[in-house]
Image (cartoon, rainbow, N blue to C red; front, side, top):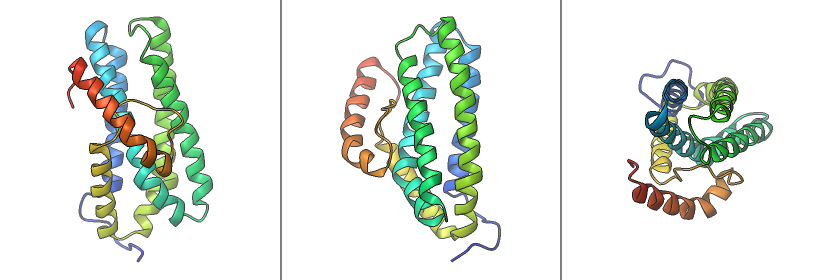
Amino acid sequence: MAQTTLHNRADVVDFLTEQHQRSKALFDETLLAAGTEREESFVRLRRLLAVHETAEEAIVHPRAAHELDNGRTVIDARLIEEKHAKTALGELENVDVDSEFFTERLRELRDDVAEHADREEHDEFAYLQAELGDSELQLLERAVRLAEAIAPTRPHAGIEGALANAFVGPFASMVDRAHDAILGYDS
C-alpha cells in the first residue's frame, strides 16, 4: 500500500537519517579532538558506523532491493561503498589518532560516508518512505534496532549483505563485544 500522506510517527527512515546526522557530528568531533579524546570519539564513531551499516545490510537494503525498480543495482552500489568504508575504518583502527595520515584519511572517509548517506537518503530511503505505509516503516525501524543491538561493533570488510551478516555477523559480534568489554568500551 503506497503512502500518500506524510507519516506521523518516527520510522526507519527517520531513525537512520538521524544516525547519518550523528555520524557526521562524530566525524567533526573526532577531527577536532586530540589524544585520548580523539581516540574515544573515534571508537564511538567506528561503533556507530559498524552497527548502522550491519543493520542496513541485514534489514533495509534487502527490502529496498525488492521494492525499487532498479533495486539490486542501487543496493549493489551501496554495498560497494560500505565495503570501502569498512576497509578504511579498519585501517584507521591501527593508526596513531594524532598522526597526519589518520587526520587526512578520516577527512576522506567523512566525505565518502556523507556522499554515501546522501545517496541512501535520496535513492533508497525516500522511495521506501513513499511506497511503504507507516506501519511497515515502523516495523522496519524495530527490526533495525534489534539488528543493531546484536551487530558487530567493528567494521568487517567483506561481510556485506544480508546473507553474509546472517552467517558471519553473530560470531563477529560476539568477538567484537568481548573485545570491547576487555578494553572497557561502553556497550
